[in-house]
Image 1 (tube, rainbow, N blue to C red):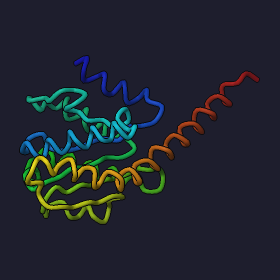
Image 2 (cartoon, rainbow, N blue to C red; image 1 turned 45 degrees about the vertical axis):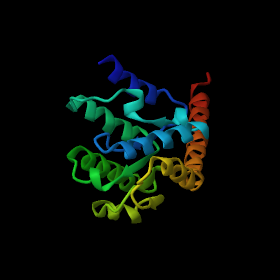
Image 3 (tube, helix red, strand yellow; image 1 turned 90 degrees about the vertical axis):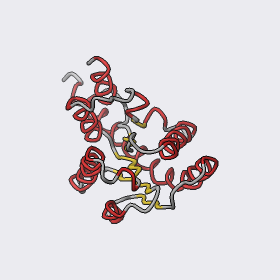
Length: 191
């Protein structure tokens, strides 16, 4: 329980809300390797602290308990955006379908009141998730990664374009957060 609480506590106390990394850990090795390489390059680009990757930060939860899933949904709600990595292998997994719908709904509900970025990467031809194309701030679809050696190249290929979309969200939230902190300081000053 302490580990589950720590992720929520860490999210609440961040200066800038994080980006949520969503993928299915029940897919094949190459897809999971893609996620690892993407995360490594995000860390190398200075966004590592600002990315929530549950399996990396919390460990893989084999029980898939209600609390575990509620923590994931709360992380989606508290983040400023999500990187959603999808494939044909995960499109029929119930939890991944629910999580991707929660992310898409979060994007729709944010409207103009708040900024919420949706960054979608389709690793292969997965037709069930094509509806995300019109909602996404970043959408990249490519063929199945057949070779492990190609994974690093594929990540590098999309990383530059992804960063041009991710960094403005982080900067906007930083400005928004600084303005909110400044408002709190003004309101707290003695009269």
